[in-house]
Length: 151
Image 1 (cartoon, helix red, strand yellow):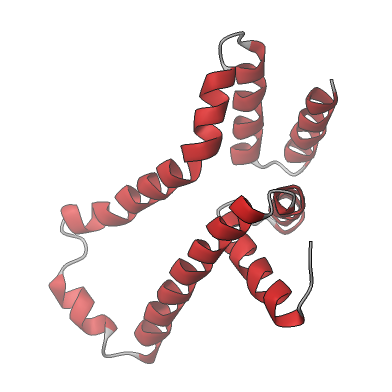
Image 2 (cartoon, rainbow, N blue to C red):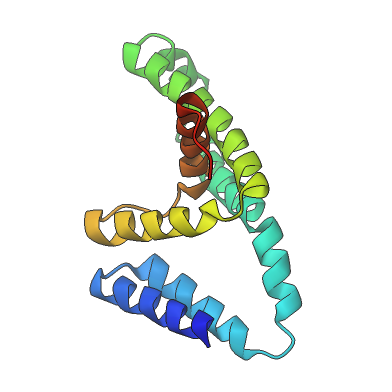
């Protein structure tokens, strides 16, 4: 019963914040909870969903290359601008933080609750996009490690 209330609260916040992605995600999870055989699906989605999401995002990012909108000339031009170098550095940093984030989530699953809450607040209150829980976990790992904190 508690999980239904929690999901209903998230749905209400998502509706108030007019966040269609979070509304859709919450409704899908609620629908899965209604299906008697969906527990196995939820376990699979929970364990592999981040990788699936990264794959879908990667496909989306590669489409402009496949359609010819981005080519080798664009890649060469990236190396000619300070902004391009910043973007490369940020890409590297995000990849490293994501790796640490996945490790953090497996070692300290309780941090997931705080990350989900923070992500929902960021999405609803600040019109953010819920694409960064793994990165947020990586940042959490770095801050916790630097400050010698524990969860």
